[in-house]
Image (cartoon, rainbow, N blue to C red; front, side, top):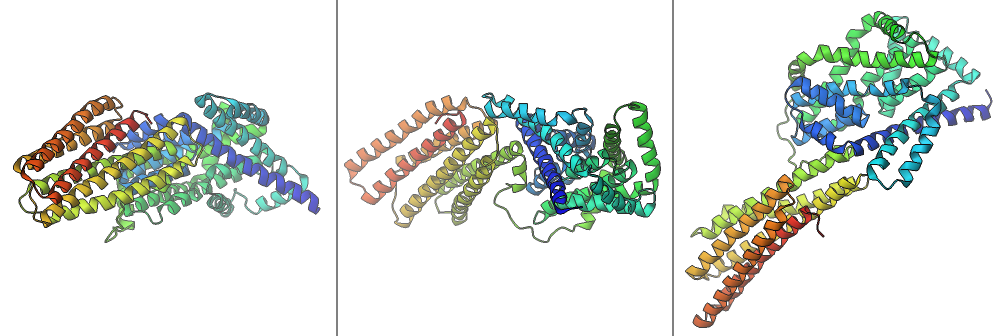
Length: 553
């Protein structure tokens, strides 16, 4: 084989595989964008019911077109404490079924139409003004790229010299023998570990089968191997994660390894069963299409059978991985539950960041509660003082982490609602952090007064505590609106905000009048008015949160 021909063939193979993988990515991103809300509701539907968890795993993987992304996402959820180990195992088992949809897409009789589909969908994707249509076109464009990439790879394998070389290689891995079957499975496993995509390995296997270079039994054995190889992604995702996240990744590995090992002795019978089913359901059609259907059924059948066998024993699997991965003596503490593993699924990532923003609101509410306890006590509670200042420092870091996380989310190709939600959360996080700063400022002013031995009048103390209660209730109302996504909280925030501003003015006027009469301490007067200003700023930032929630600038 001359060098020019070899370069041409390699260009087709590499280019075809690249187009195939890019098509899978576009298909996944397009479907995620179109089904974003459904995806969030599906994840929210996960319960300890193993069947429901399995169905959710299957449905989510069908939507995002990647079991690797699903398992990485599940590891992230377990790592953040959003999902239990039992729930995660159920979802992972279901994800193995969902990923087999790729093979069935390739069974469709649209192989030669891959390029036209890609071209037409690209026009809609580039020039459509309607977002939903644009991302739908993106998913269809991905499907076109998958078929065009597969066709390009197949054309590279069709060269007579290449076919001869491949036939010689596959003759060394005769799936008709037990050793040959293991060799084929090893090839599928290693190839999938390298590209970290079972869909890519399946695509190359189908492309080889379409040229007649490889028989069905060999392809089926490679598919058994790719089921083990695909676990590498979850394993890599678990590195540096919590103990339970590691256990979820190990459950995925055990499920696929055990599922493959028990099937190996019955592999020849399984191949015959698949061939028989396909011949009954589809006796005609092109040889390449029939082979694709057999490989797709092999992949689906393997995972469905293993799911039926494993699902009743998810509890046992949970105990096994718990025994394998011992609890760490001390987990590394995390200020937030944000996980970069979620960035592959922006519609889920945006929900995770919202949960973190809501936790910021909880921190602010606790700071205000502690501040009231400090101000209403006769002696300064040093423990509570430390907690308030600690929470303020924590919120500074959390706000930074939320901002960095959302910046990564916004760097992707996102639908408008995710972009809007990201900007809204960025603003709310910033406002919560500002409220915490002013709460800390009020405490510093109060401690300065106490240290200087200064006193407010009884009326001023009562008025300040009443104002504090009013401000805390105001922040709690806005916080509740953020948690529930209630945009109507803005009208309440405006009316009650005016009342709070009026209360600040009344207290200031009364204080200035009293100071002019009895000639009190200038420092005490300055501290009192600064505290009033800080409470007004707390109200202003809470009102900004309500405006951000309602979509106002």
